Length: 376
Ligand code: ADP
Ligand code: MG
Image 1 (cartoon, rainbow, N blue to C red):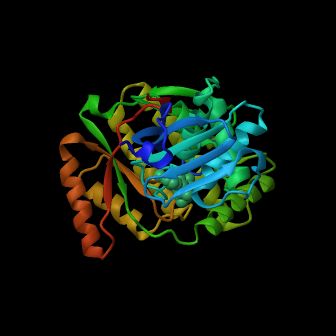
Image 2 (image 1 turned 90 degrees about the vertical axis):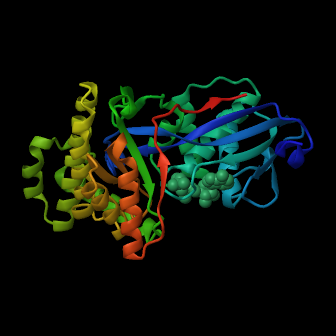
Image 3 (image 1 turned 180 degrees about the vertical axis):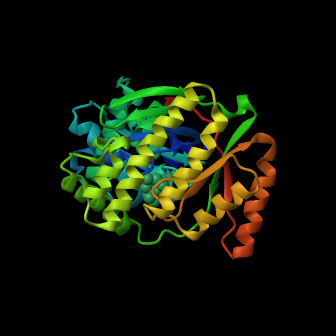
């Protein structure tokens, strides 16, 4: 008997999937109206589903206890808690926008680490949304599904996240990075196929415990907003790279000055990376990764020893470039490496973590993959 039948006692109507992501470069520029460049990972959340006629949604997740049921009629922010808040939030936002979805049985399966900065939350929201829409043959533009998933995470789950994760999960295509301009709300698919150039992109989960993340995230946002207000611009995106020195001289607070320097230089690094990728010069992107890490460590101050040690070790073992990716204070690093050097570099990171007494890290394949889709 399939796991779905075991849980729900009926055969499924179909399966849908949505991937996790890593951002190649452009960290903490999203809430400054900046530029980001994520890829979708091969790791994903899969939802197998069947329609119900009684207005109930029943959800189960491999790795979580039991089946949780809630009625579509009584959904409101906060009405469903814990992990089931994500599927409930997706249903709630679809109903709010008058999509004619009905009840459903949903089985969640995942090979995407949760809470590791690889965006399992957005993958779960996007997978639920495409499954509920797919069950009722409702076609919605992928970028619109991303906006709905963001609204669910903001308003139902209560997490003040930007739009990058959901856009990556919905709109990425295999062999490309998604160049997303948050101010203009435009996207462009940028060819990015490390394997075709004899390269590999490594993702290493450093397994560092998150420390004070919420407060630190809010503090970074406040610094950026305060600096933008003092400079008389709506967001730091308005400060051109050429105007940076002048802007820094006009700021009174030294911490704000460093935060601004990170955001403005990081936006420039995204533009540089896109130009290099368009020219087919993948290896030259490596030093931009490394410069981004230094900026996040020294100016934005969101790295932890595990992230710095992983990056330094990857570089010492021959990586072309390496940086932390995600919100910081834990999560993952990415490293651009010669494919032939992959094992050497991963072994060096393992050894270095053992020497430092850190938890053993784990590596993922980061082949640039496709966004959400129906699979059966
Ligand atoms: P990230 O998005 O970086 O993985 P978040 O804290 O934003 O981290 O989201 C993680 C949360 O998403 C988990 O605490 C859980 O509530 C939910 N989640 C992720 N994957 C699953 C899964 N396979 N089954 C149930 N809930 C999941
Ligand atoms: Mg998340």
